Image 1 (cartoon, rainbow, N blue to C red):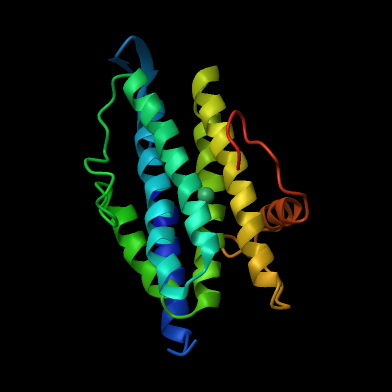
Image 2 (image 1 turned 60 degrees about the vertical axis):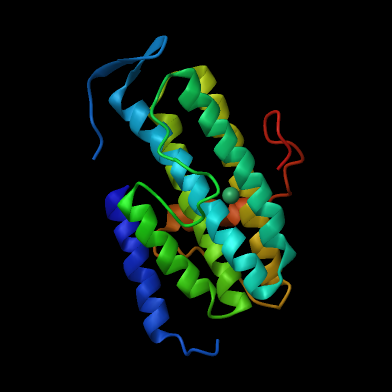
Length: 218
Ligand SMILES: [Fe+2]
């Protein structure tokens, strides 16, 4: 995750520089709560709790900046994703990295902390860049959630992640619909040169909104 986060920071900083102003996974086992989770399961649950907060906090910040209602709507959904991750944290007796949910823009994870600043700075450049930041966040989320799904055999944990993944697909569709309403075409920002990834992103964008994501809407 760290390498990829650094790549996003570098790419986004490069975009900012070019843009005119107008415009380690552990192995082994740990015993926690009532069940044994692997170190990697714990790492992903903890990370995803804050990654969902990153999405929520960026949208909370960018929405009022440009008066785009899409950010408020999706921020509400991200809060539900944060809640879902907190449920897992409590179920397995893990330490919640989110000390104060109301502390927008604050993260225990240094990479997410830096990413928040970089993404908000980019999104504050223009309404278009704000929407592009939203789409980028959802691409990142989809990759990380899939990695988290692949890293566990527990059905309850997978089910939570599947709900988050479905939500991210819908969020990406919503951001891209806004971008393309201006006659623009959206292409993957995360791995633009990766044919498999870009085809996956296209398949998501070109498929309809999913009416329910697990037990949750969005
Ligand atoms: Fe999302």
